[in-house]
Picture 1 (tube, rainbow, N blue to C red):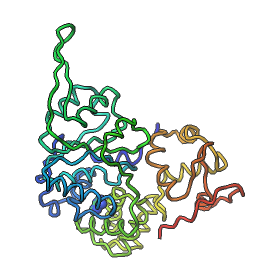
Picture 2 (cartoon, rainbow, N blue to C red):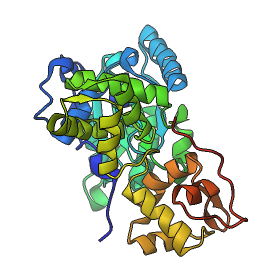
Picture 3 (cartoon, rainbow, N blue to C red):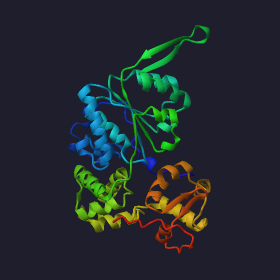
Picture 4 (cartoon, rainbow, N blue to C red):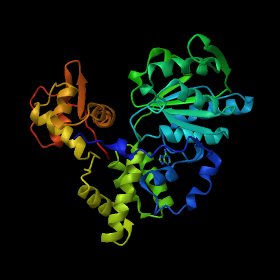
Length: 366
Ligand code: ADE
């Protein structure tokens, strides 16, 4: 059975309309201990630009556009965010909605599976509202085509009735902002991409930002953590806030049961080792990928299908979740002939590398 990884951590979709201000009220004092995985991730989200840590260039750009939209009373342009899961694409939609003071309507490409569903989403929007479509690369082509006039001219063409009596009606929509999110910018069609006023590839968070996020989350969760503990959780979290928040809770458990409740560097490192998260943040699935590449395929080059088959894993999970970090951290490279393990990967697995292996740079999670 193919396993899925961090997609599982995705907070469950929220109700279609999330009234920003209400949802955000007093999250700092919400009793989070009994909250489920999705609920606490939501409660830890920054609510506005001021609370948002990291992705500075992106936030600065959005801040300008949001201010311009507010000053002039116009709807914010359509924006597209790309990047691996867990970097904050959904969070950004909520932050933008909050800053604009409008409703955010949440949906996703696979959920809008026919034109009628799109019509019902679009007609429920209020003036200047935000419509967030996650996994927008998975929209079906008919739905996508009907989205174009909505994005461009704020109108929607409908047929009322069937057969010879069918009547074409054009509905006027309120001006709205579409925020699209994708883990695969490359799978978006050119016409859809063209209709966004701005796209941005989110990058993995820097260690200092990750450490600040862990410290902030610990404060919200009421977890005692020192600087060493926050740094250790941060450096094992693959530059991904959602992973950091998940690991923080696990480390908190170990500290409560086997320590005095405080997360210091030693407690964080020992707990995360036991959870199979190593000192650079690779988990069992990452290491399984590298092991297959290095040991079964001699370091490559090898195609993704062959790796996926050897691991009994879904190709999409490997491409969306596992590979982006391994590429960024220099453990693998992609060549026209397939994936290759770098010398860094061989070293990490303590296997001696053949001479032809790419160096991969020197990844250090300091
Ligand atoms: N929690 C998750 N992501 C965050 C971010 N970017 N800033 C602050 N807290 C966060």
